[in-house]
Image 1: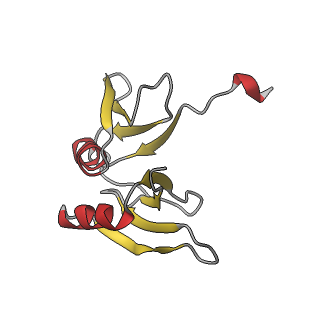
Image 2: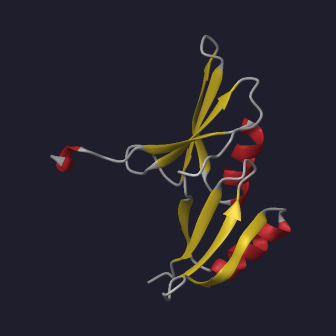
Image 3: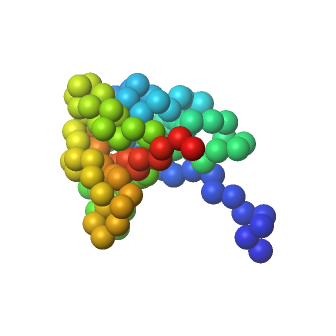
Length: 133
C-alpha cells in the first residue's frame, strides 16, 4: 500500500511570514518555491525547500493574517536538516543572530554529531552533521 504514498511537506504556523522566510532562506539555505495568498481565508502560504516539490519534501509556512504568535504545545518535536560541517554552520547561524539552543556534540548515547537552533517562532531545528562521502 505505501508504494503509492509520498511525504510532501511539513506545515508550521508562523507569526511573521517575511521574518520566517528570511530565516529559512537566508540562514538555512532553502529557497522559496511558491507563495499563495488566500484573501477569503485570510492566510498566506509559503513553500520552501532545497529542491523542487516534485522530488523533495518541503516546508510549508502558514501565516494566518493578524496572528502574531502561537502556543507550540508539547507534541511537536523538531525539524531535522543535514549539514556538512556542524561547527561552521552553527558559527554562521550565531553570527547572523540565530539562537543556538544546543551546541554541537554527540547525541546522547551515540556518536552522531548534532546541534539545535531555534527559528523566529521558537520551533526547534536539529542540525545533523552529514559529512560528504
